[in-house]
Length: 166
Image (cartoon, rainbow, N blue to C red; front, side, top):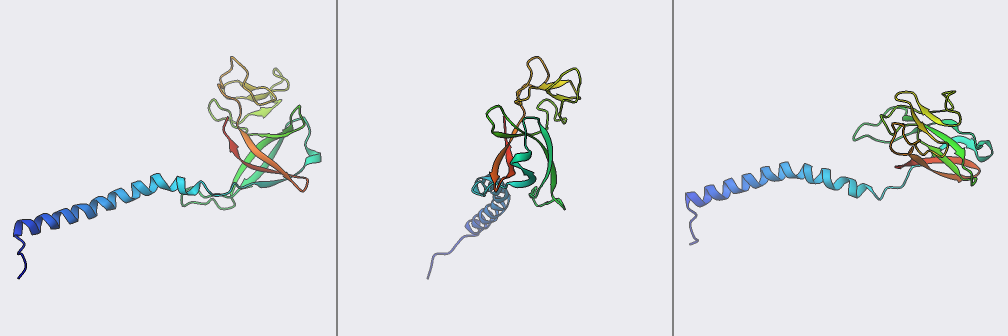
């Protein structure tokens, strides 16, 4: 006949198996949470048509609203998320799109909204200022330039993509 298993060994195996099962139940979500972003990096970038032709874009910043459809965890807002960008051509003629979110406290910046600071982006929350090229004015609250959206042109229309952090 075979070797008999003592009560002590049986309890050791049973408790060890149960502990292993419970530990895997706790560790699996943590591992999934850490690995999931790495698996999703291969997804393509989403560009949105903002209903603006290249001919309509000038050197004067223009506010453009657009809608992005994306999931936040398991939640996807109905109708999408409404975003805004300041679109213009820079001195080289390239199209740039700035995020209107101030890098100081996240308020919304506007173009030429303060008569005291002509041709600048201005944040009314704490008098944050940015030059026309999106760089922050030294000595004002923001310590970084405005973020830029990725842009591309297809069939003469402007498409705006994800934000490139400054």
